[in-house]
Length: 190
Image 1 (tube, rainbow, N blue to C red):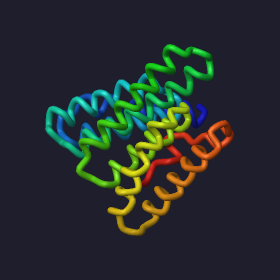
Image 2: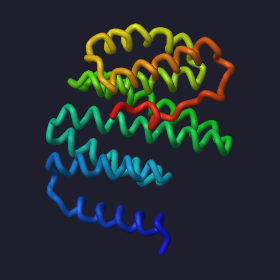
Image 3: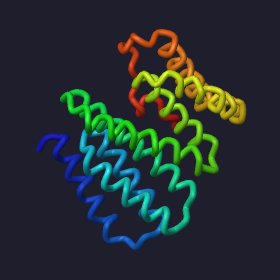
Image 4: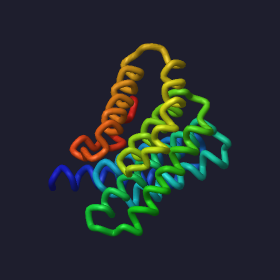
């Protein structure tokens, strides 16, 4: 059996285990991690389903950080779905998924008590705004991102965030250059 099939079987077993667990924070976290893993292997529909379940559990338990993290992950999955729709020239789906990603990133940034999640959400939103040529909205978001960057101490995460911001700013300077497109996974701050 190939490695892909073996990894897929492992992920399916993890899902079965998670679905039998009561709705505690560990289940919300596990479903979010599984949804992120499925997005990474291109299982976007299933990723979205599990991330939505994670969000619902986090909301039921009033876990603000988990809500923000689930929204961020949902935004990344919606963005990946939009990219997939663009590839097959399905403009209606692409537009809906871009809006879903924007909404999720906005919600994550607004509800998160953690500056790291706020910043990651804002950077992903900025990148998406630039990629979709919504330049005025992108320009308006930059001061909030710079304010967030000022709040976090110097670390590998903050350096990566600054590089991500610089990348988006360069794309704003040269809006016709799509060769520098960045996916949300590349812009995540670990």
